[in-house]
Structure formats: structure tokens, C-alpha cells
Image (cartoon, rainbow, N blue to C red; front, side, top):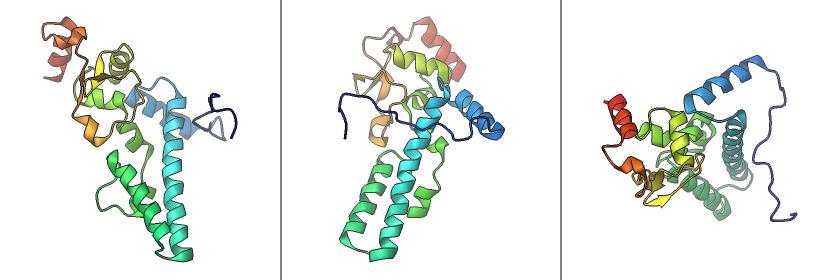
Length: 181
């Protein structure tokens, strides 16, 4: 298990470091979602890898022992977790989980949701507003751009109560609203 206070890597770097097609696709993702570095893409890939391996595990258990209570419970746990974040629909099958893409994970990040809701002019500005403490979820300040926002929390994403951006007369707020109009 190891020492619980020691941080561990949450990602694994690519095996082929200089693969041109992968580098290009990662660059496009980093620009589109306003990511700080490639490590954030690799972290999202690792999250996706864990969900896919869970789905493969359920399929293997189903083929080996059938529809046992353990298999059903594991499937329900996996589907419920992914439904909470809006990654799959209510009638999701294992094929839906296996067909998820990295973009689906990146769409559920707080940084992307702040940009999509029109609280920032660009994904980079959304990241800046979050790290500077201008964004809150249900009144609670959140300063982590990679925070995975659940469907229930999505409606509560707004400016923090003491932020200067709450005031409609704020110059930056007016620029944000004018760009969205």
C-alpha cells in the first residue's frame, strides 16, 4: 500500500514519445479545452482507461459466471457513477461505456463547463477565473479547473458571492457578456 501521504502519479505517459499523429491530436485537444499541459490529457485518458477496464471486467464476469449478484452489483455501480457525471444515458449498456472518448471526460471538467455556460470568454480565461477564486459551485468556491462536475452540480456553477465579477457593471463581466451576445 505504501505511505498514504505520498502522492502518486495519476497518469501514465505515452509509450511512443514522438508519434506525430498522437502529438497533433493532443495539441488540438489542449487548444480546444484550454489545458495547461499534456499531462491533463493523459490524466483524462487514465480515467477513461479505468472506466473501460471496469466495463471489460463486467463483461468477463458475465461470460464466466453469468448474471450473478456480484456481476449485477458491479455493473450497476459502474453505470451509476458514469450517469452521475452525464457520460452515459439512463439505459446505458457496456458498449456505451467502451465507446467513450477522451473528449467526453474533458467536457465534464469545471473549466469547460464555465466556458460553455458563458462565464468566461475562452477556456484559458475560464481556467484563470477558477484558479483566482471567482467561480463557485452551489455557493462553495472551487479552485481546481480539473474538477469533474456532476449533472446535479452543473446548474450551481456561477460566480463566487464576493467576486468582483458578480457586479454587472464590472468591465470584464461586460466584455464576457458582449462576446457571448
